[in-house]
Amino acid sequence: MSLPRKMKAHARKHAEATEPHPEAARRQAAQGKLLARERITAILDPDSFHEYDLFVEHKCSDFGMEKKQLPGDGVITGTGTILGHPVAIYAQDFTVAGGSLGLAHARKITKIMDHAIKLGIPLIGINDSGGARIQEGVNSLAGYGEIFYRNTLASGVIPQISIILGPCAGGAVYSPALTDFVFVVDKISKMFITGPEVIKTVLGEEISMEDLGGARVQAELSGNAHFYAQSEAECFEQVKRLVTFIPWNNRKRADPFAAQPPEAGALERIIPSESNRPYDVRDVLRSVCDGADFMEVQALWAANIVVGFARMNGRTVGMVANQPMVLAGVLDVDSSDKAARFIRFCDAFNIPLVTFVDLPGYLPGVDQEHAGVIRHGAKLLYAYSEATVPKITVILRKAYGGGYIAMCSRHLGADFVFAWPCAEIAVMGPEGAANIIFKGEIAAAADPEAFRREKVKEYTDKFASPYVAAANGHVDAVIAPHQTRDFLLHALEISEHKTEERPARKHGVPPF
Image 1 (cartoon, helix red, strand yellow):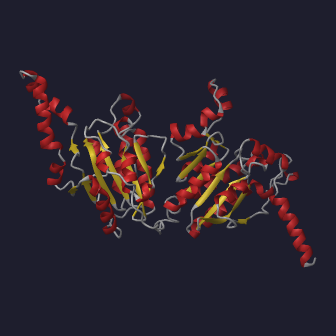
Image 2 (cartoon, rainbow, N blue to C red):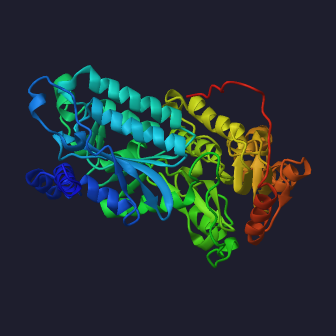
């Protein structure tokens, strides 16, 4: 066959493999969903996508499968760039056998995962699948296992991003759960281990797919999702933005940007003088980071702690902050999990940590104790202690009890600890401490309330002042709020080449 004829044959074969079935495409559009290739091109830079394994075919011959041709076996794989950053990507194609995972489908995914690990580039997976291909039996289960294994090998080596743009059920959900960031879209994303029909059959409970595992549920109630969007287009913009903050792999640092001044505004006016009045700690973060550009992670879940990425002097930093607007910023089961996971990601990918402290401690209560707040709270202690990236802490207001220790105190290896003059650092709040220490004297006083106020002030001056902690070397400097950015920039600059040796070990055993 001559070259021109071969080229025509190639064009025909390429078209057959890439053109979606019209009716399947119509159904996808009716649900407000883009096609798999449209999703890839919407995420990547124009003309940067290079597809691989387009002509892979399944080998299943049971249940009439030998008569079925499944273009690409229901998944598209390749590489491209996002804002010039190289990435590996795959997208399950729901228009081909419902995006079901068979052995060839899984091998395409694991092959692009292996490429990503070897090349040291981020991996993006777009999940839209009916689950395991039943006709292939145990081979489809083997395929999932191979993917999970590689997710684990890649963890802490390259960033892994999962985008849920359709159903993701049963064993399929464990791959996103093993990745670093999960993106969901309202009314489109669905994640659950067992679907509504199984729950109805086994438990007699009726629930819709949306209420069981919809995007809002995963982003706000379960914490399985890190970013929530109203549309696929918004989701893709979130992915592009995230990629600018994180490095390609664990041997690099995130690309620097041109430094920008922070948002104009006086930090002194953000925090109320009364220690029990709430404020939005995100205003503090935006006031110290470049261009007020703060990308919050898991904004809807465990809102009593805020985590996310920002830049200072053009360099990416991870920020962790108690949120006084929600539960006074206390630590609990969920907020400890949220912060610990974020801290470990930053440490794995060479991103310095900046922590802002304002909390009364851990949340008391029977529910929290029974939910394992001891174990979950210990995750935060472990994550900060394990981290060897630069760690800088600013105590804004309250830092009481175990919360003071847990929020990257000097004792957990913070490189620099700064405190504002209004900071209160103590075993517990002055009110509660005075009531315990001076209980008998208060009861016997002629004016118990006046005597109690006097003792509260005495305890505050003697123990809760930041100068007491500074006198013991637990705080490096007591600084005015307007000095915060300057101190942070200097601390980040001088700790950029920090080295820290740890005892040799295979790995630690965190309190999972």
